[in-house]
Image 1 (spheres, rainbow, N blue to C red):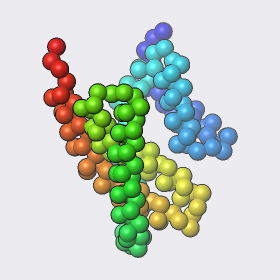
Image 2 (cartoon, rainbow, N blue to C red):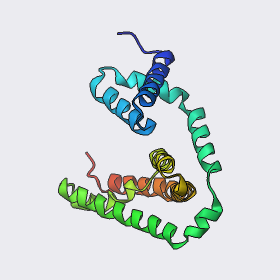
Image 3 (cartoon, helix red, strand yellow):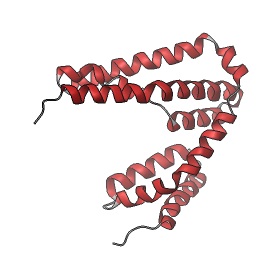
Image 4 (cartoon, helix red, strand yellow):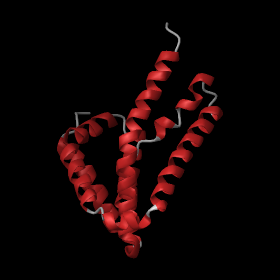
Length: 177
């Protein structure tokens, strides 16, 4: 088979969006499902993803720009301790689940505590889910969006460095071959 063109990649995106509209399902879930199907069933799925990755930057910038424009600081401040509790509990859940998963997966002892911090980054899917929740519960829109965007900012500031630190610690502890 020939290499897919950007037209085919756009076709997949528009087909998925059209099906989501027609079936009245979430765009987010439809997109994630389409990606999973392509990744697991298509023989040359890397090409389609590579084509989309080449053109995704303006769409990502627009998505996060619009999400940031939806942030209502007044709603965020009114949440106060709930925001702190959400961020704190999410960190605790990631650390505990990372360690539990590592133990269940029988990874080397030196790596067990490094899995949790590598799970901290959060970005588009969380914001997308908040948008879906806001659509379903419009009276809570400002709360959902503000809390999720604030948490995303926090986790995108601390997450990547935590992940890189975990990767470097694993690399240092790995035996040289």
